[in-house]
Image (cartoon, rainbow, N blue to C red; front, side, top):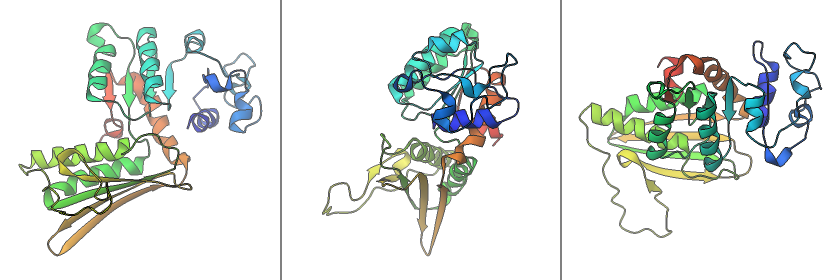
Length: 272
């Protein structure tokens, strides 16, 4: 994802790649890592193209380059440290890492609180694909009208967390929609014999059962299945390539400076 973000920034008018940080690739050329020619990108007016950048070892490079926005797609512990650095340094942050707890979000709300003197804003989204955001919204709309619902999320074999952040956020929005409509949680599973542990998945927010698939060849996919007497509804979104996330990332990068404090989800950026 980091490479794709760098390539996208290099190719988009009005954006400048000012720094890149990855301890695993220190000293490597960004151009070589993302597969573009040296000197590619908008440049910063001093004759050095963005693609000529070398990958730095630590976050201090971000402050040294006076970046406006940091984009982070890493792991939870790394993102926590990056966000603390951004909040202290007055650098806006767009975060695609998943797994943040409610305590994490509360802490970030304090760190990026303009009333507390923060000069930096933050957008955290479980999914930057516009289609995935719409899928979550459609699922929330449907949730009050059905008597059962389950989520199947499918990702590549290297994904660390299960279930995915997108599926958890989907279930949270479905549960909130049912509560707003004065509908109870989805009923408990009545399966009496589980032949293989975990065959019925795990119970997520609002009683929504969740199933995680991890296979080579997948990118990011999710189905929300609803059932009621005599009918069913399936809402599905597929990301076949990481390029599906890039328009949402760019929207967040362009919007974060105008959204004070912490924004969770891409929905407010899209106005839905």
